[in-house]
Image 1 (tube, rainbow, N blue to C red):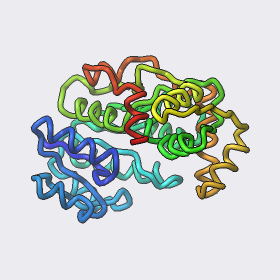
Image 2 (cartoon, rainbow, N blue to C red):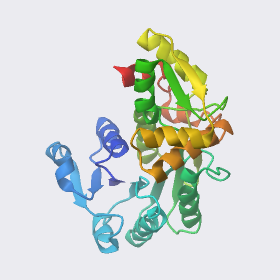
Image 3 (spheres, helix red, strand yellow):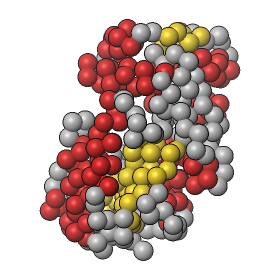
Image 4 (cartoon, one colour):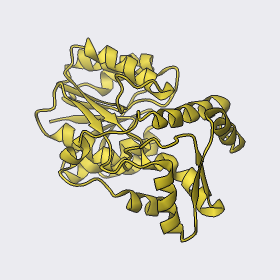
Length: 282
């Protein structure tokens, strides 16, 4: 069985490839720049070059692929067209299962980050290739910079209020994706993925307090004020606005997941948040 992973040079993609290797698979890594995965090639991973913008290259890269993980792209504003290119190439190649990394609660998620995911899911709904949706919740790694700053200053800032976030580590999501790619019975499924522990900003601050061994409090800001803080930290305006909007979505509970799907796919408990925070601050 030939399994391929797009975006295999990225943080999530690499971890999925590693998870597949640990399962005894020899996946195909589809990347824009093969030089970035030269180490994987040395370990027996077949590397094929293609970008989401190049249908002809995608046709070549997907030849003979039976199961495909489409990792969502990072070029905001272009992702729906890019994802559609991959989906159409998968149809032409006769791919038997396409898994897509979406966002938690995508059907009703009003966050800016969710819009292109929902539009991609709409494309998949009418595609001829069998699909499975991996609606990944928030990555604890997304908080890395904020948690490190909080450990230094004693203040964790955000705009999520009392909203709960069912986060998980990138490695947990990668392992779940590998499980879907290597086992049967996932066609047509929608997995809402998130950790077992849904935490508020104050809960995260308490974990930083434990790890950093200094008092850390959570300070909730208005969305516009939080966006200004992010811009002050050097983020581009549009990205700062998107992240601040995500925090507002968290406040509304849009990233709280209660399905237990991640635990079921892992056949184990996801990484405890304390361990995730400890790793981020190490």
